[in-house]
Length: 187
Image 1 (cartoon, rainbow, N blue to C red):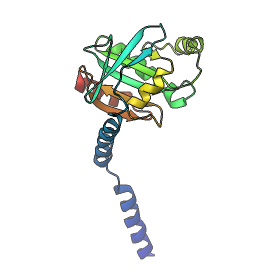
Image 2: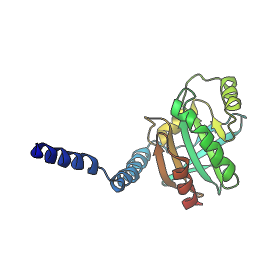
Image 3: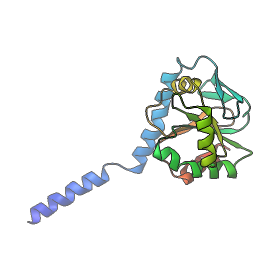
Image 4: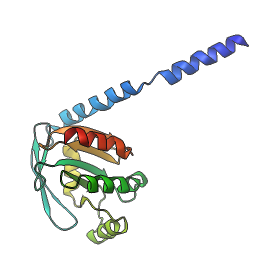
């Protein structure tokens, strides 16, 4: 009986102690470097995105990032999402909070990854959810998704500093405080 208890204790320690937060952070930070490297060949041209008000946002590839016309000297948080995605919808209040808090220094640019979503449907979604940040809609969104290295899971966010350089990324639902800490680092 004592042997079983010892084996169980050792097994639990190995299982629970096998993944430290430091290792996860390292993996999390090394992954985008590969994504950005893979994307170098696919992001050679400018992409024109269209927001819900019809405004054009020209996305220009630069070394290790992008420049976003109209948002020069601002930190840009690019959020790939879909209106049917529960975690994407759950993050809306948090993104609204961040946009309100850093409105003069941050722009949240949400990129809709849904085919055939009419502008009327998107406007209704924006109004229903009281969204206060920029949402772009159109076929060019998929080209932009390819230019960041492809989007396999949503929500997926990329944070770019004031010069358009890549800072970090987030896969899935992320606590608002974590995103805010990273925003403060690049401000």
